[in-house]
Length: 87
Image (cartoon, rainbow, N blue to C red; front, side):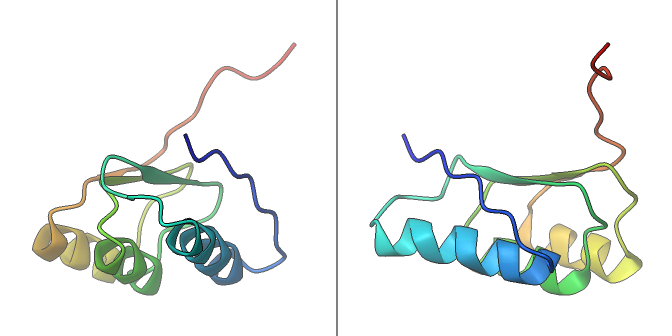
C-alpha cells in the first residue's frame, strides 16, 4: 500500500508531489483520495480528477469551481472533515 505523507509550504506543490510519487511508483490511484487541511480549489479538484482519485476530504469549504469540477469528474468532496481533537 502506498502511504506517503508529504509536507510542503504550498498545497498545490504537496498535491503535485503526492500524485507524482504515486505515478512514479506505478501505484494505481483509483480507490485513493486526498486529505487536505486547506481549501479545495478548482485546480486541486482538476488534478484529482486527472489522476483518477476517488475522493477529496478537507477541513474547509471547497470553492464553487471545485464543486463544479467534482460534479463533472464525479469525485466527491467531503467538506468540513474533522476528527476529534487530541487531548
